[in-house]
Image (cartoon, rainbow, N blue to C red; front, side):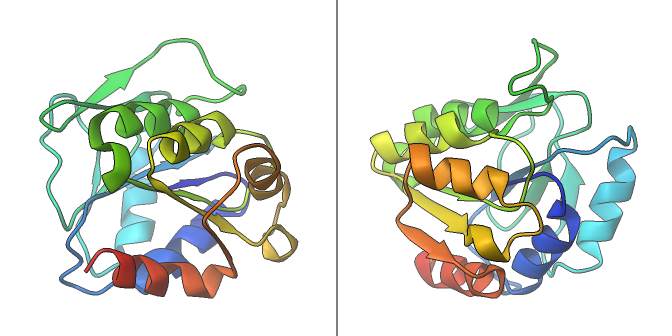
Amino acid sequence: MAASTGGIDALRTVLRALPEQFPAAILLVQHTASDDGRALCEILAAACPLPVVDAEPRQPVVPGCVYVAPPGYHLLVEPGPRLALSVDEKVCHVRPSANVLFSSAADVWRDALIGVVLTGANEDGVEGLAAIRSRQGLGIVQKPEQAEMSEMPRAALERAGADHVLPLAEIGPLLARLCV
């Protein structure tokens, strides 16, 4: 799941709609100017019935947990599946980048992956969502006209396409149905 400008409220809306027994892991990138990843985890945890944690290197990915990319690090998925962090160059002027997360996750989970692009003011997530969809994973994009900043979802739709284009309030319930 990826978000930028306006993303904290958008992520809270999506996460709030998930059931306590959600059977999949959620990995998310939120572009932020803050260096305090714990604060973001606390904000999201207050709205989410699932545990929300800062992603750590070599951490096994466990269903029913939300992993947040720490500020200043790209979040990647390795076989296992396990998490990895990188300080490689910024992608789309950001680190963490949704493109990096989505592309690495698509290599591991292939058709069992769902990529979600929410509000944002850049084009991060486009290439990663295309990678997910090229491996028969699903793409969900927030309706651009209803996003606080429409650039990120609009670019995703124009260049990667989507299987579902929804208002924010419908994304969490769809994820709950898809991951049964």
